Image 1 (cartoon, rainbow, N blue to C red):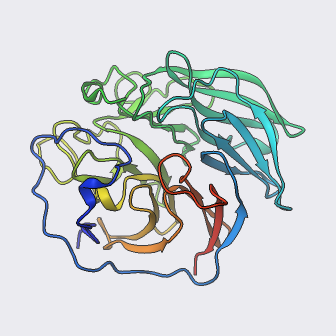
Image 2 (cartoon, helix red, strand yellow):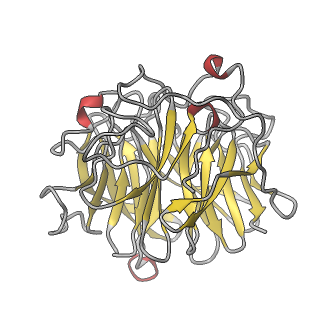
Length: 360
């Protein structure tokens, strides 16, 4: 069965602050009645706090020695978290212009990091969002080299996730900056999933002769693949439905013509939808068998769902109680999650945090 995440709808849903919001869109399916309970899949063990007092953390990458690199959005710093729990600044990224939802966002390592030392970051600059490659050596970042510029920027919907795919190419989630007309324009880099080679050149089989891989997106902040090479992406809805999509080359995912389960010929439906009050999804982590862990900002939880043929199982709550969750990553037998309570939320005394949960 094709799961639909209509779960735990609060009577205060429309009073809460959404991860992003926009006017209603046409042609979306009507909202079904609220469920009265949400299935829960508890993690098997006690959470571990790996770092605290982080300043609006956004993304992380695991170094070969097990230490972590973490981006701090508003400070424009990349910090290193050692296995001893110490946090040190690796670099302040020059040229970052934080504002609204923009700043220092995505981070990923080269597939050949052990030999080339390349680290890729996505950030909001004065006039655009861009992807810049650095060389990491001796616990510092140097030799900045822009490999993709001209991604539209805005106060909201800047996208920002970077991940290398199984083909060795770099995939980039972008947003439409609140200008929904960009999403259906395949000449614009906004409201898209982009695909480029590691050096910034354009793959010859990209569908539109530029960096655009798929279009019709509102704001993509989660990317991941299963063992069969299927690409999953999370997407912020407007006022009705958030989405988990399977991405195909050249696919049109509908925004702003349709949202969530809305139907239109030539536009691809999502694998799953959630009410925006229960998700506002950011990062995702995908296992080889197609289990997807999805970080929820406004929903303040981690959702879990597994591939079942052409569909996904009904989502269950894997973890909650940590506030807004910006990113999730699978590291060994644990799920790492980054909270996002110091930007929009109710921060605890030690927020923001990086927390490890047993996968069970």
